[in-house]
Image (cartoon, rainbow, N blue to C red; front, side, top):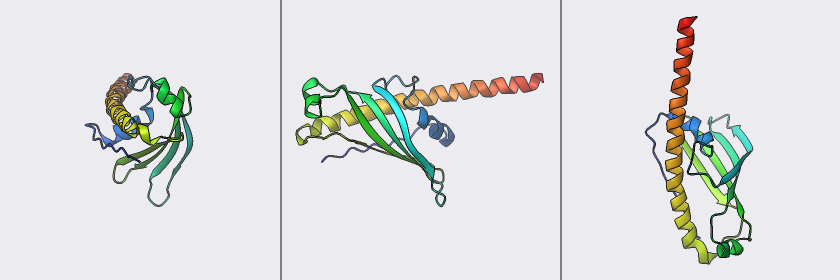
Length: 151
Protein backbone atom coordinates (compact mmCIF):
# COMPACT_ATOMS: atom_id res chain seq x y z
CA UNK A 1 0.00 0.00 0.00
CA UNK A 2 1.29 3.46 -0.83
CA UNK A 3 1.14 6.26 1.70
CA UNK A 4 0.95 9.99 1.07
CA UNK A 5 2.31 12.61 3.44
CA UNK A 6 2.33 16.39 3.24
CA UNK A 7 3.95 18.93 5.56
CA UNK A 8 2.98 22.61 5.32
CA UNK A 9 4.10 25.77 7.03
CA UNK A 10 1.95 28.89 6.83
CA UNK A 11 3.00 32.52 7.16
CA UNK A 12 0.34 33.14 9.80
CA UNK A 13 0.38 33.11 13.59
CA UNK A 14 -0.32 29.90 15.50
CA UNK A 15 -3.57 31.41 16.75
CA UNK A 16 -4.73 32.14 13.19
CA UNK A 17 -3.80 28.70 11.85
CA UNK A 18 -5.22 26.72 14.76
CA UNK A 19 -8.50 28.68 14.65
CA UNK A 20 -8.89 28.56 10.86
CA UNK A 21 -8.14 24.81 10.88
CA UNK A 22 -11.76 24.16 11.90
CA UNK A 23 -13.05 26.23 8.95
CA UNK A 24 -10.93 24.66 6.21
CA UNK A 25 -14.02 23.13 4.58
CA UNK A 26 -16.17 26.28 4.65
CA UNK A 27 -17.58 28.43 1.81
CA UNK A 28 -14.44 30.63 1.96
CA UNK A 29 -12.44 27.67 0.62
CA UNK A 30 -13.19 27.52 -3.10
CA UNK A 31 -10.82 24.54 -3.41
CA UNK A 32 -13.03 22.25 -1.30
CA UNK A 33 -16.32 22.37 -3.20
CA UNK A 34 -16.28 18.56 -3.31
CA UNK A 35 -16.83 18.45 0.47
CA UNK A 36 -20.53 17.91 1.18
CA UNK A 37 -20.49 17.65 4.98
CA UNK A 38 -18.16 17.52 7.97
CA UNK A 39 -19.42 15.78 11.09
CA UNK A 40 -17.51 15.85 14.37
CA UNK A 41 -17.68 12.38 15.91
CA UNK A 42 -15.64 13.02 19.05
CA UNK A 43 -13.45 15.70 20.56
CA UNK A 44 -11.52 15.82 23.81
CA UNK A 45 -8.46 17.38 25.43
CA UNK A 46 -5.87 15.07 26.99
CA UNK A 47 -5.53 16.36 30.56
CA UNK A 48 -1.82 15.48 30.75
CA UNK A 49 -0.60 16.82 27.41
CA UNK A 50 -3.21 19.47 26.57
CA UNK A 51 -3.50 17.96 23.08
CA UNK A 52 -6.93 18.33 21.46
CA UNK A 53 -7.93 15.09 19.68
CA UNK A 54 -10.81 15.30 17.21
CA UNK A 55 -12.41 12.65 15.01
CA UNK A 56 -14.43 13.84 12.03
CA UNK A 57 -16.29 12.16 9.19
CA UNK A 58 -15.90 14.11 5.96
CA UNK A 59 -18.41 13.33 3.19
CA UNK A 60 -17.14 14.12 -0.30
CA UNK A 61 -18.58 14.08 -3.81
CA UNK A 62 -16.57 11.64 -5.90
CA UNK A 63 -14.65 13.18 -8.78
CA UNK A 64 -13.22 9.87 -9.95
CA UNK A 65 -14.24 8.44 -13.34
CA UNK A 66 -17.30 6.15 -13.24
CA UNK A 67 -15.21 3.04 -14.02
CA UNK A 68 -13.01 3.78 -11.01
CA UNK A 69 -16.03 4.47 -8.81
CA UNK A 70 -17.38 1.04 -9.75
CA UNK A 71 -14.17 -0.55 -8.40
CA UNK A 72 -14.67 1.30 -5.13
CA UNK A 73 -18.32 0.51 -4.52
CA UNK A 74 -20.12 2.45 -7.26
CA UNK A 75 -21.21 5.37 -5.09
CA UNK A 76 -20.89 9.02 -6.07
CA UNK A 77 -19.95 9.99 -2.50
CA UNK A 78 -17.14 8.81 -0.29
CA UNK A 79 -16.33 9.17 3.37
CA UNK A 80 -12.99 10.13 4.83
CA UNK A 81 -12.30 9.52 8.51
CA UNK A 82 -10.03 12.26 9.89
CA UNK A 83 -8.30 12.15 13.25
CA UNK A 84 -6.52 15.36 14.15
CA UNK A 85 -4.26 16.34 17.00
CA UNK A 86 -3.74 19.98 17.95
CA UNK A 87 -0.75 20.41 20.26
CA UNK A 88 -0.68 23.89 21.84
CA UNK A 89 2.76 23.29 23.37
CA UNK A 90 4.62 22.40 20.16
CA UNK A 91 2.14 24.46 18.08
CA UNK A 92 1.63 21.61 15.66
CA UNK A 93 -1.51 20.24 14.00
CA UNK A 94 -1.42 16.66 12.75
CA UNK A 95 -4.29 15.27 10.67
CA UNK A 96 -4.49 11.61 9.71
CA UNK A 97 -7.04 10.64 7.07
CA UNK A 98 -8.25 7.31 5.80
CA UNK A 99 -11.07 6.00 3.68
CA UNK A 100 -13.48 3.26 4.64
CA UNK A 101 -13.96 1.81 1.17
CA UNK A 102 -11.83 -0.92 -0.38
CA UNK A 103 -8.84 0.39 -2.26
CA UNK A 104 -7.63 -1.82 -5.08
CA UNK A 105 -3.91 -2.27 -5.77
CA UNK A 106 -4.44 -1.37 -9.43
CA UNK A 107 -5.49 2.19 -8.58
CA UNK A 108 -2.82 3.01 -5.97
CA UNK A 109 -0.84 5.28 -8.29
CA UNK A 110 -3.97 7.21 -9.28
CA UNK A 111 -4.94 7.52 -5.63
CA UNK A 112 -1.53 8.84 -4.60
CA UNK A 113 -1.64 11.38 -7.43
CA UNK A 114 -5.13 12.47 -6.37
CA UNK A 115 -4.03 12.83 -2.74
CA UNK A 116 -1.05 14.91 -3.86
CA UNK A 117 -3.25 17.16 -6.00
CA UNK A 118 -5.83 17.45 -3.21
CA UNK A 119 -3.10 18.34 -0.70
CA UNK A 120 -1.91 21.14 -2.99
CA UNK A 121 -5.48 22.39 -3.47
CA UNK A 122 -6.10 22.00 0.26
CA UNK A 123 -3.11 24.19 1.06
CA UNK A 124 -4.25 26.83 -1.45
CA UNK A 125 -7.79 26.74 -0.08
CA UNK A 126 -6.61 26.91 3.53
CA UNK A 127 -4.45 29.94 2.64
CA UNK A 128 -7.65 31.64 1.40
CA UNK A 129 -9.44 30.74 4.65
CA UNK A 130 -6.53 32.10 6.70
CA UNK A 131 -6.49 35.36 4.72
CA UNK A 132 -10.26 35.77 5.08
CA UNK A 133 -10.09 34.97 8.81
CA UNK A 134 -7.34 37.55 9.32
CA UNK A 135 -9.37 40.17 7.45
CA UNK A 136 -12.62 39.40 9.31
CA UNK A 137 -10.94 39.35 12.72
CA UNK A 138 -9.10 42.62 11.96
CA UNK A 139 -12.35 44.28 10.88
CA UNK A 140 -14.09 43.06 14.03
CA UNK A 141 -11.25 44.27 16.25
CA UNK A 142 -11.37 47.69 14.58
CA UNK A 143 -15.16 47.80 14.98
CA UNK A 144 -14.83 47.01 18.69
CA UNK A 145 -12.11 49.66 19.14
CA UNK A 146 -14.26 52.27 17.41
CA UNK A 147 -17.27 51.32 19.53
CA UNK A 148 -15.18 51.58 22.70
CA UNK A 149 -13.82 54.98 21.65
CA UNK A 150 -17.37 56.28 21.12
CA UNK A 151 -18.55 55.00 24.52
